Image 1 (cartoon, helix red, strand yellow):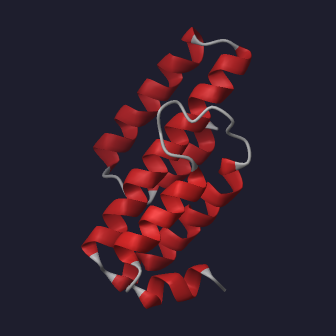
Image 2 (spheres, rainbow, N blue to C red):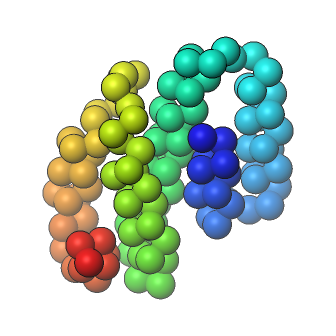
Length: 114
């Protein structure tokens, strides 16, 4: 899970923020046990990827849409592993909200649906 989180963030965050993220992830690894750690990582990954995706779509720069599509497809795959959404809306509701807010961005949705 940590690798997915860092991979998604690495393409979007500045180097200084990436280093901070890596340090925090390593510190968290030592404090959490098995199943709890997996659930925590899933919710962290989901939250971070959603924030990155929201930012990409808010900015409306079509040259970054391919990254956004890749992130949304990762969220599609991850969502099946999450049973406790820990206060977040589930993936289906998030996707509906995303379509409602950014439905006119046909370049993004065309790439996502192919």
